[in-house]
Length: 275
Ligand SMILES: [Zn+2]
Image (cartoon, rainbow, N blue to C red):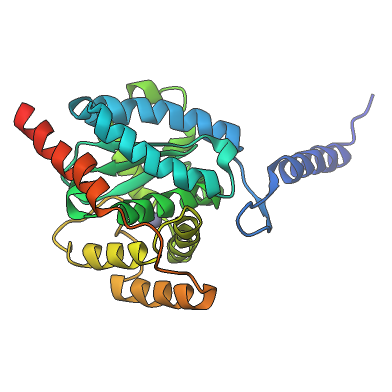
């Protein structure tokens, strides 16, 4: 039988293209727009699960304080309940690192550093940080970044090292996250969507503004995620205030200064004295 190479090529190409197109197309839960992504939420979860083990092994051991960790997670869960995709199953943990930082792994594993916790001074500010990171996950910024890197041929190791990730050191993960910085457009979206979550969770919208003011003073640090490609803090404060005004967000929601002091500031002192 003679095989028509041209026809075969066209058929194979069409099947590949169609399968890519159909399998990869999904509606973004935040924007409602259709987009092409090479990674499913299930794969993201699997990846995050592997990385989270490494991150927690390296940076979490020294912070096994039930009260502090429960508090961070309880604030995060208030955000997760009102976000676009609560079914992802979010977890929020503190890790022991001096940088003023917070980041999200694929699949909803969100971390805030002790450096950041020390810089903040009330619960609404913590909720603002966790809201921003949650928005990166729900708006599928991580999946978009992985797709983009894959398509432009960097062959991102985050996607390809899935099998060998158990041997990956946290330094590699951190380096990859750094390389995987989000675009300014995504950062701005994470700020405004995060602000929306903050208010819906019952917090004062001021928490987001105060957080930006605090971060503005932290210029001596160079955190992994929170500064790399972010718009300048003055800029961020401007459009956050605008969003508060345009949406009519109130500032009468929860602030939580005493709760934060008891569950974070005091606990950090106790943990330090134990070490
Ligand atoms: Zn961000």
